[in-house]
Image 1: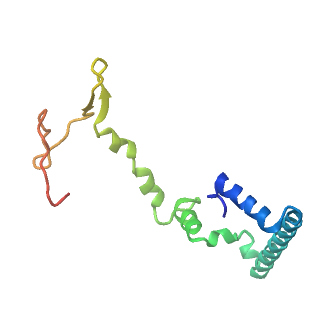
Image 2: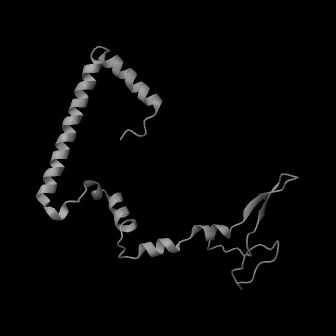
Image 3: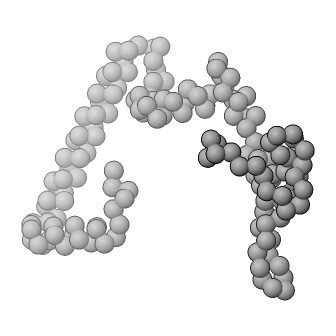
Length: 145
């Protein structure tokens, strides 16, 4: 909940709390707030246990975090031993490294310090499938851009 608060924001909140409530009332306020948070947590935990007991033994491993859509999708599509839709096979067939190996890689000339792009493999033209000659530009497709 508060993972995006930086040190400056936290320091500002502490200073504002000291100014608003005063240094003598601040410890009692913090203690009361922590007690309230503990009561709310215990109430939520007991409610979860009541729901689990009412659902019966079929749902003994039921987790409420699984109801979050992102967790549900991750668990159903990416996790588990079962893969009824075949997503594991599709995920394993995608190999990004082989795609990146076909791209030109930058190299630095040692003497002049200039950067040049070297092709790692022959580039085929779209029309005939034959490799392009050195220095030849690939055909431009206006609809593809």
